[in-house]
Picture 1 (tube, one colour):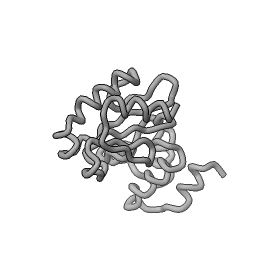
Picture 2 (cartoon, helix red, strand yellow):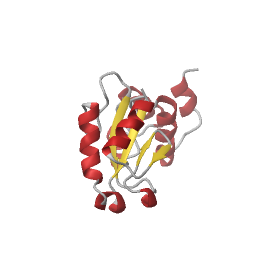
Picture 3 (cartoon, helix red, strand yellow):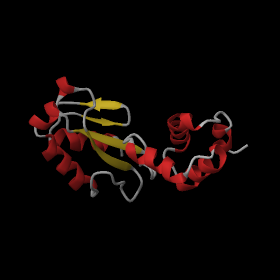
Picture 4 (spheres, rainbow, N blue to C red):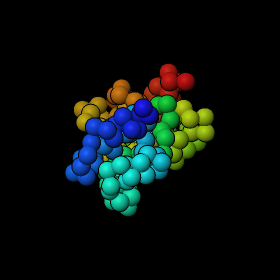
Length: 147
């Protein structure tokens, strides 16, 4: 049985759409058009409704992410400690803009509202690891660790 079929076999009701999409994203890394059409056919939810949910919640991704996802915090604590300058530095260093993935598929850059590390501001996460008290030099050193 295909992975998508296995996921969908656990669900039968449109009220479970968010759970379905979370499971698909967990399994595939993002929500492909093909997989959303499979949800439409199996659970009988209009594709427009599936896209509506998938685009409303920022946790859902409609295109694949890089091997390492860099989330730079722009919350209040980080913002007042110049996180915007660090975000621009990351864009320049990686050669991508916010929400994009490097050509080699290594990094995806995302500016997020908060990562819950205010005491470490300015902060970022790479995958599930938090890095704080950032400077441009510290960011360069951290990125080198993930090459």
